[in-house]
Amino acid sequence: MNARKSPFVLLLAAAMVAVFAGACSRKSDTDGVHVSVIDHIAIGGDRVTVRGGGQRAEIGADGAIAIDGKALTLSAEQQAAGREFYLQATGMKRDGAAIGKAGAAMAGQVLSTVVQDVRDGRTDQTEAKVEAQADKLREQAMQVCRRVETLRQAQQRLTAVLPQFQPFARIKQGTGDECKDRG
Image 1 (cartoon, helix red, strand yellow):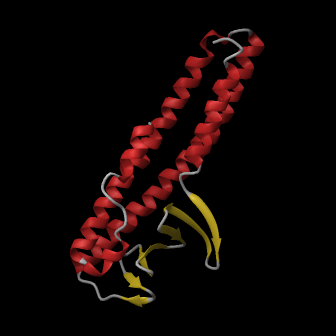
Image 2 (spheres, one colour):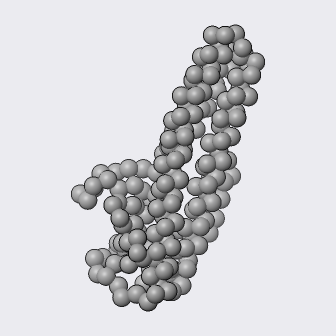
Image 3 (tube, one colour):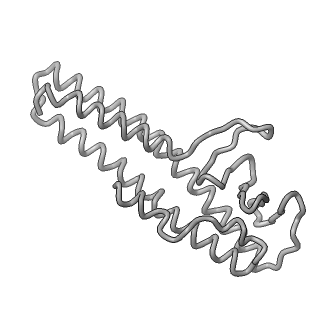
């Protein structure tokens, strides 16, 4: 790689970091910090909050569900489906955080590699080194894409056993496909 391509590689790496780190957004709320997993799903404390149809459902780690603050009486099957939805949503949060950390680490590594290779006059392999780092990050991003589909399936199971959850079932089939196509 010649020195003329180096800014392009750095720009590409910075753009990837920004995209992957932005997969989850943080916003302040009266209850503390919430992490938005998908636009209508937020995680704060030990609750997953899902918005739909002008209502708000909260799902606890144990699968307990409340709609607009009113706890639902659930069968064991319904509670298990709620617990699975909770696990998939919080798993997506963890995956997104891991990508953000990996992206930041990759940006530092890329910058270090480019600077060292330019300084040492060994830029012929810089692009390959950067691409190898980017491939690792792409694979982590694909995990989030797969998690979207897994979360959608959990949503469908929950809706099948708990019809009251229907207004919150806003993850459509193929939602993760756009993400996969970019990888």
